[in-house]
Image (tube, rainbow, N blue to C red; front, top):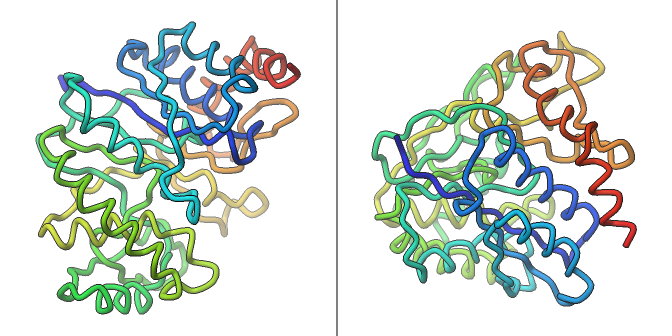
Length: 305
């Protein structure tokens, strides 16, 4: 069995209440549903006021979760803050097989697939973001050779023709990184993240947020590596669901192991939205039950202080 460590970044300098809610859900799903040891859970906290955030830091440390106070990776691009996790794990002596880097708007709901020794696992992007012509132009401007292409999974793009993208263009919500590869990847990913931030003019106005995803793609391509794809269940995109037209929506009928719920959280009731697919909703009910029993009240109490 793989020895896994789990990590996310919580940015309390931007939309503090949202990220506090998300990180409490993220941590609780690992502790209460997957029964992960707290010593294997790590949170990098970005804060400009530790006294203000002492309550949430205390909530986490009381659960013996490992908290690391961090500075933003680059103030010009907050989505690249996830890279500070890599720096942390390259300077520690923690024993693990795989680092599971996750966005904090995720909830772990079921046993993970086994990892078979590949260096990197991630899920191919569902939609052409960024679009292929833009990606190819970025690769050309980077000076790297043309990248390997692949088709995006057709079951996501219901009723649409298959679209090509770069093989390493993966959704940034979940990465599984083998310990032996973390150090090398850190150097190249951080290099290309800075390069992308310096060259945001290469990104279309509504695509600049993907600089972290594109820099990962460039790093993997430069290193001659190809991602081993995660199944859809390991990064289930609730944001893809169409709640108003189940027959025409982008629906995947598979039980989520990791639910990437994005903005599909009611911040008044602290319930993740159900989608009408029994297979999916059964898994969502696991974390919603915990939210309804006590976690929603804990979130409200903490945010009211």
